[in-house]
Image (tube, rainbow, N blue to C red; front, side, top):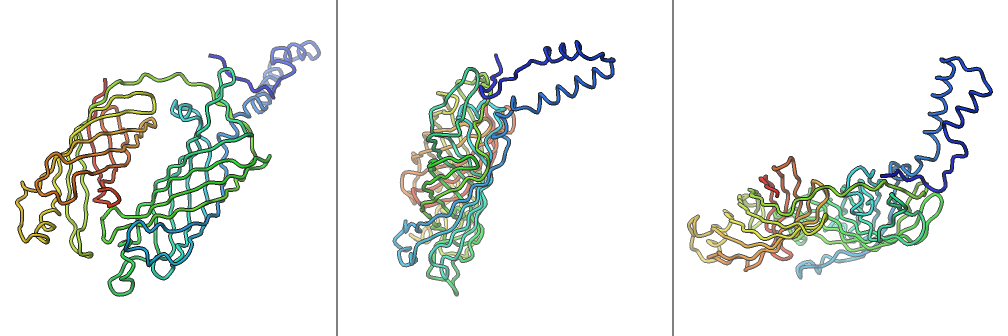
Length: 405
């Protein structure tokens, strides 16, 4: 496979020609010649022949002021929406370095650390929110190739879909004495999730302007009630600071992929039930999942979940004054799964239905979304959130074993 040399670099004299001309005009001693050769090699290595890597290795700073509103996704939140939200995102990012095949498969994404400040528009009850997240910007443009290189242009229209996950802090949370009307966030520390779309408006030599829309979510996964969470929707304008230059990446051969994967895992979590400030209950899940890989980036699967949620016993007792036995709260669910794959990471999105649930406390359907990371060839770690539509049930953390063929 050939290495691609950008068209804007055309060396006038190759290395061997330069050496021959020097030998013909100067009487080199061996030590002098070796020294001169070393200098020439160093000069060549520092020329723009490798400039295509500059924009990949360089860290750019993206400054994005935004304005929007807190989405009243539950009727009990309507009185809390008292003004528009506003704030700023500061994104320290760089393009992936092109050493792994998923970099090419996703058309050279941007990734980095995103710092966000949000004034919710109701400082006395919802406060201000701060978050730090890992943000991955996936290009939506069709990939362009020049000979054996993937080429990212520094001009023309480009747009991205961004996915972020991290931790957030809120200055105001629910409190029975001082903030009892804001039954939204029960803890100051929360999980921060973000989904955004951004498009390039105009490109300069020293940067570019972008604009887009972002949805940010803050909640603690029912670890501490109340836990409605906040969803902030906003429009933003970004200035990307840094010298703008086209980027090239040598094409990497497609790795060998498994057709099928079978996994068994165990995850668990802690949750509260109403009323707030009560004890925390343990939930445990055993899962079986079979998946078929349909492309480098995607896999579909079906599986089974066996649930033991200790919070169901007191919850049922509260509602019917009948305390069920541990066996009576066992649940079995069937899931349809989709995975978006990033090398060792997988974004899991699952739709489940309870096929055995004697109590039917939360309806017939459940959902799961989160991350799975392959620690080795067979062992994986998992961090996911189980929900019933817009209501978080509990966060799941666990491990599993996978077979591939």
